[in-house]
Length: 69
Image (tube, rainbow, N blue to C red; front, side):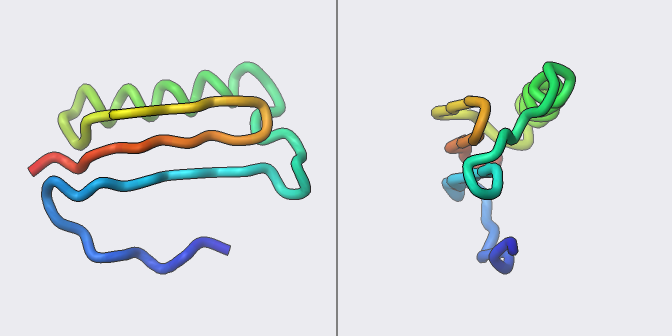
């Protein structure tokens, strides 16, 4: 279950993480992996955030992003 949304403000640093339940695969097909990447790139190109770190593996995805001011 997702946590409630915290306070949002420009310049806030967010740690976004997704894990597969019971260490099951998060990305079942290459299309799933590519979709995650394309959504992250779209946020970057739209100027919604800047990405400071990322990790994408079969069982989890993790991003540290700063919201645009």
